[in-house]
Length: 125
Image (cartoon, rainbow, N blue to C red):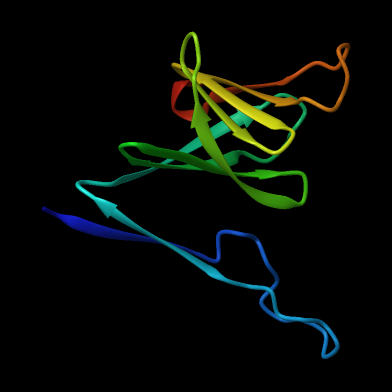
């Protein structure tokens, strides 16, 4: 049996220097996985967002994660059942990918709120 260790250090977007009165809440998340693990990094251009959005995908069956920035935080999304593509969730947010396209949905934004449309930067001419 092959055991791989995958560390997600500093991915929670926590400040390196904190005021003297602040409590240091930084941490390192270590996943010990049986079998092969793969980490892919993809860049997306998203509607209404000037800077490219970088997403890390961690694939280690049966664990499938996406780590991406949302507003001022870096969130860890977990893959769930999807009719097509891959649907990841983190709290109120859904990151749904299908081929080169992705949608970021805020489930708390209301029925009339539009998702943020994204396309893989690799597929932009």
